[in-house]
Amino acid sequence: MSTIPEHLRYSTTHEWVEDLGSGRYRVGITDHAQELLGDLVYVELPELGRGVQSGVTCGVLESVKAASDLIAPLTGVVAERNEALGEHPEWLNEDPYGRAWLLVLEAAPAATAELLDAAAYGRLIEGQ
Image 1 (cartoon, rainbow, N blue to C red):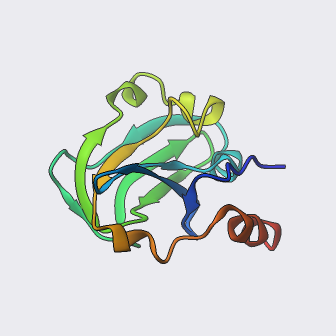
Image 2 (spheres, rainbow, N blue to C red):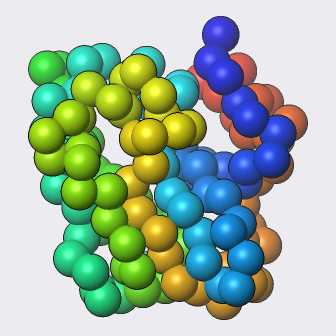
């Protein structure tokens, strides 16, 4: 069974969002997503300063099984990227809610309104 931290918000495309305050949001993929993808071997993240739109592809995650689009869970601007994932894509499998965060986005607080809480995300993945 997948781990679903209570303090995070979730997209229906299996990204998590952590509110860092001051309009900054850390983004990663869920434990469920990394289980579906299998062993991750490559990560392509959007450039710093790039605008991303909620629901639109902004990067690529490649596993031994297949390549999968990274879908932006919020509309905002890329403020930080986890550059270490270039050397350590396996962290996405080992620690999806910790050292394997992907991006920090600057976004309006209302941007998170459509995201799911942990209970709703749990129901979503149970139904898949």
